[in-house]
Length: 277
Image 1 (tube, rainbow, N blue to C red):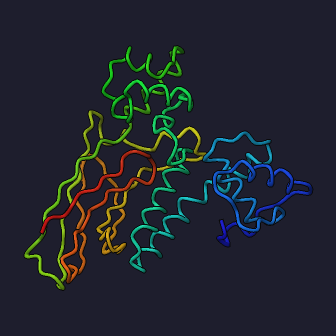
Image 2 (image 1 turned 135 degrees about the horizontal axis):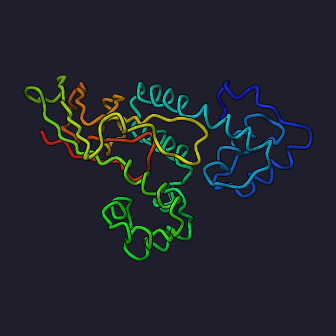
Image 3 (image 1 turned 60 degrees about the vertical axis):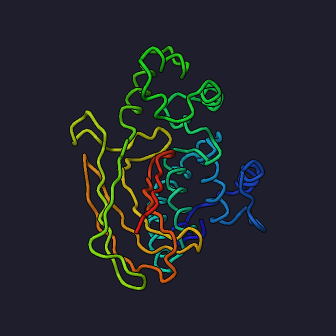
């Protein structure tokens, strides 16, 4: 929200009152907020977007413009953070991208991403055993309708279209050559999508609360979780399959390394695989 891209955001006369009200109900507090400041306003707008907070027409317009700028900013942030080798902040920026696109917080039920599913319905579904999106994907059409509490045929069609698009990615890896502490090594990562559709029907992302078109992208990350060190990162797109090569220097202390697959558009898909060497 402090980015220079938001310097020109207009704060209309008297709008600081509305900004203050939005921040009073926002999950994340702003230290020493200046309610007539453009960056404080953007903070309020983005938090309200993720929280799905109702706003007046002017603020909705401003929130749409601010939200559209976020994915590229976060991608740049990931690049800068990664160049410093910081693992946890990089993963946090990736997770924030998911939250902005789908308008859900990490603490929210993951089923809220499905079009037409409210927080209450998502909580009810989870209480009845549907804890992940894949639990709903595997249901029969009748079970889906009952679990999601959607009786309208058009709304159910929208929900089914989103569920059919929800990516199911399998990940495998192998090292190219011998792994020696202190020496560079390359890990080859293979990604494969479980999908009945043709590759042309995979994108763009279905995100009812995102104001623009969003293509589906992923980050592959190799990191040392215990020491909070990011060793390698690569941004990839996945059609029906993809392969990527990540090169890094093996830690001298033979630290346990983890391979992460992070979505930039969906919550509940992140994968972590321990690298054995």
